[in-house]
Image (cartoon, rainbow, N blue to C red; front, side, top):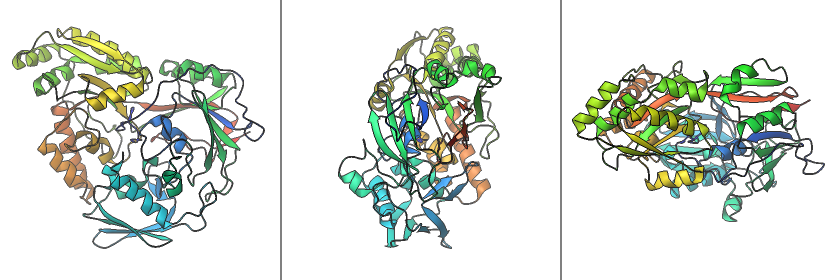
Length: 504
C-alpha cells in the first residue's frame, strides 16, 4: 500500500498538515452513527480518489469504501471479490473475469463489467498513480455486462496482485468521477459508504446494508485524526476509541501485559530505507553512496525506532517471505567509509536530509544518522516538515537524502520495479542501470517461480551493491483495539478491514 509509500511509497504518499485532536468523549454525529466503531489514525487523508491518492491515511479509509476485482486474503493469496471467478488462456495472454451479479454502488446504481473497464482505462489513459501496474495490458473490454477481458502483451504472473493488491486499483463509478465529487465524497461498492467529513477532525462511514458480501455488523466507522501516538493510545485505554494503529513502539512490551486492550504485533511486508539524490553531485558517485551505507548504524536505528519490533535488513523483502534473498553487503565500517570518500575525492560534505513528524521514525533515525555520519566528517542538516511538503520536495528533487518506507507490498514486483527501474514511477533518486532494468522487466513476464525469484534476487543485489536505496529494516504491523471489538484481525499488508468487525 503504494500501496502507499510512507511511506509506502508506496511508492508515493500524500498527506496534508494535521490538526491535533485531543481525546475526549466518543464521537457522536447523531443517533444513526453514535454507536459507530471509532478508529484513530495518525493523519488526515489528502483526498479520497483511490486512483489519485497514494497516501496511506487515505487508504486506511478507502479500504472500507471500495472493492477491487480480486483481493488478498489474510495469507495474501488473491481471492474473488467483485469477480466471482476467472480463467487464463493457454498462451496466458487473455484473462477472463466473471463479475458478480446484483452488486450496486452506494447510491443504488448497478455495478457491471463496464465499470471495471472504465476504472482501468481511467488509470491507464490518464497515467494515474498506478498506471505502471497495467504496463503489460494492451486492452480491457466488456463483451457483456458480466464479463471482463484483459489482454496482455506478455505472460503476466502478477496480474492478480496488480489489480487487487490494494485499493489504488479500485472500481470507481463514472458519474462520481465526472461530477468531480470523488475526491471528497467517494461512491464505491464496498462494505461502508462515505457519510461525512470534518476537516482536521474525522471522516464517518455508514454500513452498506446491501453489501454483496453481507451487511457489516456495526452501524459504521468514524476515523478520527490523532497524530500523537501517545494521545491515541491514551484514548484507547480510556475507552474513548475502539481501535488505533498509532502505538508508540517503546510501549509495546508494556502493552503486552495490559489486560484492558488487545494488542496485535504482526510481521509485515513493509520496508524502510534511505535514498540519495543521484541527480546531484556527489551522490551520483556510487562510492559516496556506498560510504553512507557503511557509515550508518542500522542496529542503532532499529533499536531507537522499533524497540525490538523491527528487524534489520539490507534488502527490501523480509526474511521468512517466499521471495527473500540473503544479503550482507554492508557492516558498520567507518574506516571503509572514509576510504571510499577519499577514493571519490570528496570531503567536508553537508547532507540535506528530509524527515517528517507524521512518520516520527524518520525524525528519530535522522538524528542517529547525523551522529553516525559526523564520524566521517559529514554534516547532516535535518529538514523536518509536514508530509505534503515532504512529498512536494521529493517530487521536485529538492533533497540530498531522505528516509521513507513502502507499506503493504505483496508481489516482489511491488518491492522493486517502481522504485528502481529507470522508468519507475517512484524512482525519486533517479537511479538508472540497464543491468537492473533487464531482470526487472524479464521477471514481469517469467512464469516459472524459481526463475522469477532468481531475476529479482539479481536485480535486488545490484541495487543494494550500488546503494540506490540503503535498506534499513522491516517493521512489524502494530495495532491495538478494545476488548469490546471482535472479528478484527491485523494483517501483514496493513489493509484495515472492518467489514467483519463487531462491537459488544
